[in-house]
Length: 376
Image 1 (cartoon, helix red, strand yellow):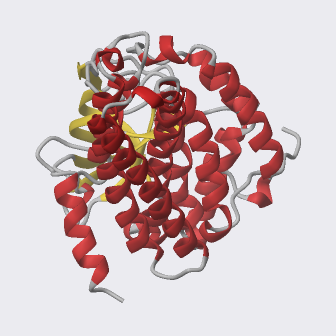
Image 2 (tube, helix red, strand yellow; image 1 turned 180 degrees about the horizontal axis):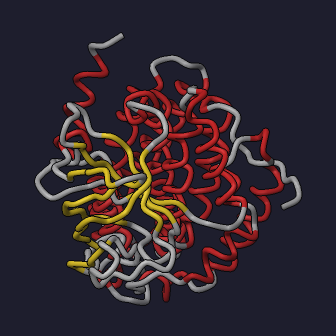
């Protein structure tokens, strides 16, 4: 790959997203991902977000790249939120190796970065039923057999299944107190159990319904363990800032499209709006403005290295709540047409609601906020 700057990638992604946007209504009804979309994004340079600048990528440090990464994801989300969400997980996952400063990790990290440069997408299948979204509560077991690790457990929300080449997960070795990060090579791996991985439920979510967030059973599933101990904890200060804001960027992209379409619809009949519709629109517009302020404030906190993890976590929850409220109210103003397939307001409403549950889900998220607020 030749060298590309952030500006080059931004321009290329904008062009790809513009093409995606031409089929926006059709995309809103999709229940599956299209590999061609991810090939176009890769050709545009998006996979560089998971590679350090020293290897031809875009990563420098979280303060320097967070705004640029979020702009890329937001641009894609304006046209297709499901594609944007799956794409956002690529830098969020590789940030574990980008953020950790451990010499023993470097050979493994560089090998993983090379896969991104070669065109491979990364994702996550960390979440487990009954864990409440907390990766440290994993019940998946890891056992060593000669020079490899075998994982046994249940996982769900493997977003991007079938598109991603590698997925990270968490598992606990029997003789260790804390779980660790493992990588599952999904290339050419069958999902029928013959390779240690069996799909137990295909994704059928109301929101983000085209993300292919399938559920899996792992039974002696071969995986590669992180080369550094406690990688999850060591990378948390960086990943904890970047991931919530990437997910927030997806929500902001949805709100951008919804606001643009609604203003055109409502503006055409503004003189005849009823009193309730005028009030509802104004309240919606205020919520959209507040969401923008929360997002911008969190970006600035990360960029200035001032309690960025707390700001990012707050922004994600705040924007998710505002978006869900704004889209519901917007539907009342637009009317019954908002739930037709010809206008994607209904699906957007489900999408932003679903995004509120994503890493971390509400209960675990509030636990994190309390901890972050009272920890220096």
